[in-house]
Length: 433
Image (cartoon, rainbow, N blue to C red):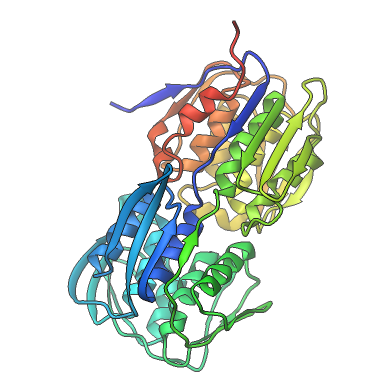
């Protein structure tokens, strides 16, 4: 039987101080760097979702011991790095539904002798990975797909060697670039990566650079269409993972949609994450925002209407579903551009998002590289499919605060990044007494 949940309609403003999970993007990068370092590292703030647990399991399977404990409510990973030495296979690596994990682990596996079989759940098998597989092949790895080139399952054997230069497109997924960057300090002569198209989601590549530097790989350079990383190895360290800015978008958006005030602690003007700028987007739409060194507060008076905006979201593409939902409550249209590539995320985050929002009467048009969301006063309850996508699920949950009768199909998909999301959402709006 398919699981569903119905979101409780807000009966008052959102007044909340919300703790969001640590960043899975940062945690998975830190886990790879720690696994490739020589010595023992401590990562404070492992994200609680499926992506991070899949990464931990894959590292353990590859002979990189990761012990997980709890300290003051935070999950702490103790990683015994191998300096890049991986055991002889055959070894099977299950990356579940985790696109980030599958791509990082595929690159990691190319450093060892293999054979290593990387696989995942059915929706992940459908996601393209051709540019990454092409690049690893150019670096000297042997990749043997079970079915179609550029898709899981794939068997990887290495080790990779050096190459004068390799080229991949930059406008498909920044995760391909990150995967190569993470292993580059262990590649002979490092990495010289050319990009045949402009880089999308560049802030995520900057996160990669920052995490690598924390583990001692300091000779990393990101230019417009060129990334270079020197051969250097990694140094074991203690690393603290900041709260996830993508997850923070949902409670901050709740304040915008319902009215009220939400504070997210641990994120501020010094955040590594590009998605932290979402508060500025909400400010453009009419919210009041305060950003301190280590917290963000978003407020909106319930008698102050939201206004639509035109925005290129190519660098904050994970937040498209969140903004599209906020835009349904605005008094003027919102046009989102620069995100045609998100059709190949966990779901088709343009087509699937628009189709589900249409079920409740929203006026959403899919455009070649984005969405147009027009105002509508006729929103009504509906049963919304999440399409195996945690970001669609959490965004649709926000609509349930202001539209009665929103039913979410497969709400458990949020376990990918924020297992406690539904409890957090239920606690935010004021209850009638």
